[in-house]
Image (cartoon, rainbow, N blue to C red):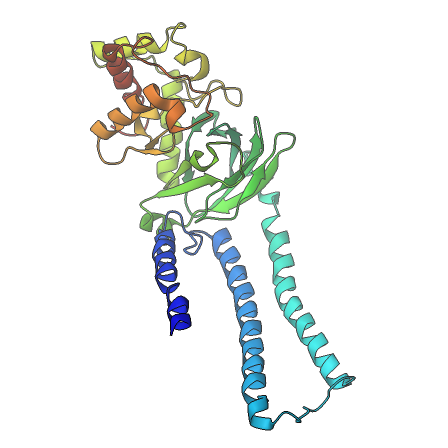
Length: 370
């Protein structure tokens, strides 16, 4: 009776694990809900692997049950000796050939898909006018933030990757400091970002699946890179090709436009931002065409319309929440994301009044939304 109770005491643990794992099924994050051609092919290959493994487990379980039930000593007697099959050529052929067949079933599509997804020739395809046809994004991983540069468009953003749907988007990935790994779980497998060499791959963002995810996917660093590895997040905003072209044009116009301020508070915030003593401008450009690949901190050109502050503080509820997130980050960046390079500004460095002005200025940095 006691042994029976001991076995059943694990049931609540299993139920709790099932409950927790069920939270992994969100469309913006789950690898089990592929949101693009690449992710779908990788998902299909994973399902093939699972099917083969389950088949093997079922066959082994059946053989085990038959052996246990049919050849029990209590049923056949202590002196019963089963038929000896040692040296059976037929059985040796069977248990040699079947695993080979299973390996071939798995290996052939795996190798074929590896070559298919590794084909980067589309990156350099050009139209009749000599312009590159595909969108290429240069990804640079840093402790603990991401930079996304668009070399053909001459613009850069950070933390929020913006891409059009239903076409291949090619990525050149590299790291500035230590090894990271670029991963958008719902859209495709990860790829390492190394310091010494650049890796390339492509993804395809499905338009219908993107709508289900509210056009916002979550990206992660999949390589243990330091104390804030788990907080090195970025977001992916998806849109139609038409909207993407408008976004690019807006970013380029912002670079050429003269800065105007809606009120004196924002102007005061801009003054603080450009104050060398405070140091913001030393690390963060507000021009989307500057410091590409060399910036010490994220480019702030579209900071006021990012879905998350620092990739981890959710801004989606309201402007009031966004405002609090920005202030919280400036005051407590070391606590919120340990090991990052952002200095902490306490009341002695930045008064509450100046913090309000600086926050309002940062919230005004928008290129594609009101």
